[in-house]
Image (cartoon, rainbow, N blue to C red; front, side, top):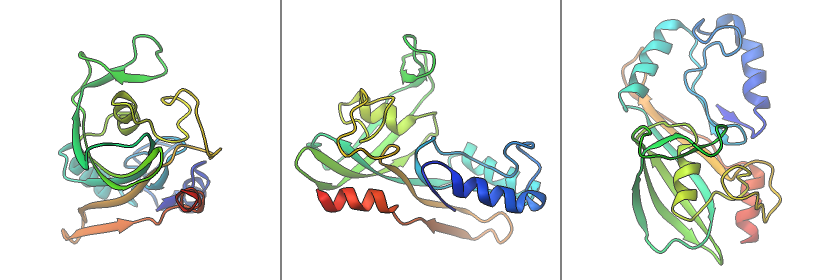
Length: 199
């Protein structure tokens, strides 16, 4: 499912299909197997029954679901690819934020550079773990915050975009019924493409 940064599409689908979705997640998030951050666009998984919900949740827990994101970050990354392996936990300075924290949980983010611009880098990101705000925290920690991220980029938003330029582009997992590997991709939203065109 391709969701808008404000989540309106996800909400619309859930409202329309509420009676046929998995009961796991309760009344607020029926069927929602995993979430993406607020103001992040792209794919989420919504299960239509409890069996599928449990199956895919187990795959996520066991790191069997491949999640690929596209992001535009501030700064020009020197390496063509890298792995960030830094534990993430609740920030000790601001409890509403996450941070790299030696007492946090393991967090592994892999990325490769797709294109370098003047002052910006377009990257593809694969996460091996699913910590809250993982990509945003890791990229900010190494000095390349996500463009438009109001929480982890010091409020800098050079293109005036609504939401961070982080897109859940591809999901790959084993279908709970057919047991075949399935892959879903969501095209970049227009505002994201417009910024890349400007660059």
